[in-house]
Amino acid sequence: MHTVAELKDIATQVRRDIVRMVHAVQSGHPGGSLGCTEFLTALYFNIMKHNSSNFSMDGVGEDVFFLSNGHISPVFYSVLARAGYFDIKELSTFRRIDSRLQGHPTTHEHLPGVRVASGSLGQGMSVAIGAALSKKLNKDDRFVFSLHGDGELDEGQNWEAIMFAAHHKVDNLISTIDYNGQQIDGPTNKIMGLESLKEKFLAFNWEVMEMDGNDMQAVVDGLNKAKSLTGNGKPVCILMKTIMGNGIDFMMGNHEWHGIAPNNEQLAKALAQLPETIGDY
Image (cartoon, rainbow, N blue to C red; front, side, top):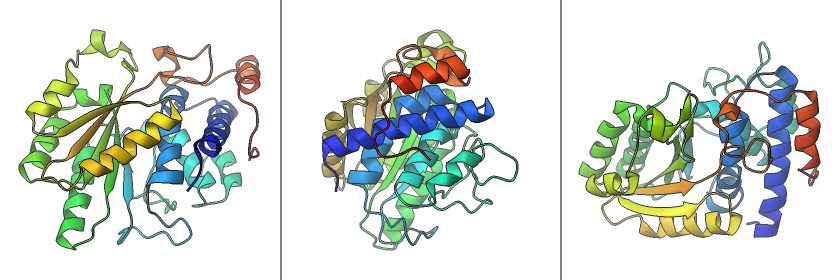
């Protein structure tokens, strides 16, 4: 268990990893990764019961996590490495030929910590529900966590899954929506309006809560609250307000940073705003 101050230091280092990784290959998705840094840091270093030293695909007796919006792989890889799933030096292989750290997570690479290939948007909810039902059938009392982009909810498969989870009372599932209001082509309210997500999930008979995804204390408190809402016959949805590109002033709130890499000058500016805390890879 880490303190909030320690989690903040880890998150700062993770942000350094993100921008350095995408800059090195001039490819990747920094915006959403930076916005979800607090969430994944808190999840892996404070909230989940998991075993990074003896990873197994089935995750029996552990909490498991599924990243549905797989394009934010830089933050996922950084957190997994920092949490001990693999050597942090491997982050330098991000998106390179024959690397286990592909642009979107894959399972055939056998990277510890990755239980599903993701990046084909809209599928993660279905996978998470299947894992949660498996735990119920096996009388495994641990939780299943998942993360989804708000723009990803344009995909219809999500809504079938959301309906299914409520009908089958999948109440060991905690699904978080990265509610940053941005997607690759622009603001979500201009591409395909989502409002109001809270009322929609409530209408689908989910427990729904909201939290500030860029305030570490709020994230820790919010995830603990979500755990307290499980076991009551309903799946749990967290609407997590974040800022795309959070932590780097010239990237914040700008959908253009969804999938472009910083140049040399921009990398230097970004790193100047992110003091090294626990060591670069």
